[in-house]
Image (cartoon, rainbow, N blue to C red):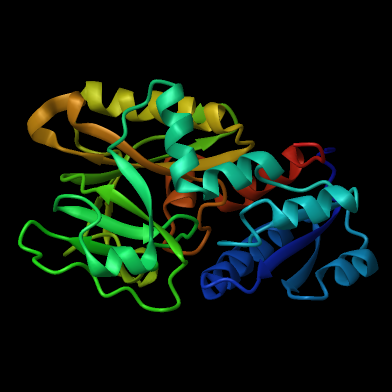
Length: 304
């Protein structure tokens, strides 16, 4: 995609997922940044009329600031392919694959990346009996923003009471102790490593509330662990077929050194809110929000 600033960019935000409010926040930040770079920008709050809105807008590029199911799992990417509108972030296959946590782990293992054991289980069965020995985690297999996550500690005698709005099939995953680390890949470059400090764990509030977590970057970890995060994030990005931008999350058990590092998941459309990790890592690397968004626009294409 040409780097000319006369491009018309439609920023897609909102959508019907549980992460709608996060997406609206990401979208507003991107709109502001792109306008600051001189682009003609149209805000499109995605709904049932998205195809019509896109056809009427006829943008040169769609900047995908959607989060969660539908906007991040290959569905909207397929619409944009069908309409022949160049778009940002990953394509249909990579988006669908990365949103499916269990299939992501298969791709990780195939690429030689370290993960913990996991399985898919029926939601009702998971509420009746422990899915695996404690401690473990129950989460949606295709969700984000740490929504619907249940942590069963070693002291948990009863299985979790999962709400009816959880998917019929959920993931049970062995609990990975340790520190929360994350690395953003922008283009073909792993930017840095952030150590995420929270009072409890990195849940929705910690991710998006101002002051909900503290980010230490670059992370104060041994050099071999730091380098492994950079390498593993790049390998994960390529193994999943990601394009332009991704963020891979890790847990690190510091008592085991580099052997204590495991991958949790890769986000193909990481948050771009004022408290989000990827823009913060980009800024640390000398890339401001305007340049960051410009790079994504200039990388946009179909057939991703």
